[in-house]
Length: 294
Figure 1: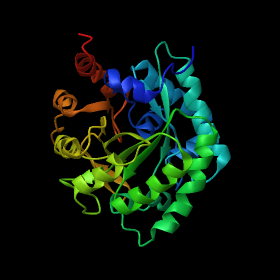
Figure 2 (figure 1 turned 180 degrees about the vertical axis):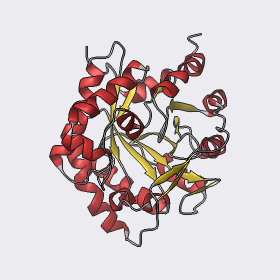
Figure 3 (figure 1 turned 180 degrees about the horizontal axis):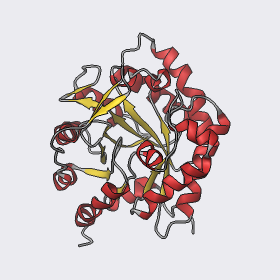
């Protein structure tokens, strides 16, 4: 069957869709080596069958959107094409409609030093555009359904990516990583969301790779500046320490008030780092209630 029979934006107008979880989480569970600057891109280059297996695990958990393994693969067109192709295979083998979102990670991800959680790289807009444009073009050439401009730490990078997006004519969602009521770089969230709200190419705005407790306030802020569909795919509540490359799990898992997210306008919901297929599957009942499916 085709991986999707309608644009993702049309589906969001009907009801919420279930996003996958952390690709690294699943690859690690499969025994893959994610060391090195390419992270999941290393597995993509060396063991692509493992990436397809990870996508398939999320499809079997009920995911309706798969994010590709291109978060920090740089400008390599072969890896970009492979990331979309593998997600496409898993989507086409599904028994339900599945969309493929090509991941465009932030500039800081390519540095592999935790910069995506700080932003403000000291680069001007033209340099950020020059970095992102060829990778966006390479991903679009592979034919995804949508771009995932994700884990953006500041408005400087968002502006640069939105200019690249406008020139491409493609559709995308924009997702910031946040801390409290600010971007990771410390900017007000209403200003950050307003940038995406003004872009006609953007089909949804929201947050990812953050503490679940930060999601609802961020969505409420987004809903105050845009009527676009919102999205949320936080981490499990663990905190990443870049200097030691380790996760610190919270003593008590933070709550995921998914029903409240949906009432606020969330239409794409899933997980990011340390959120695996079983946790994604557990989100399905709330999304079915949100769609009126019972």
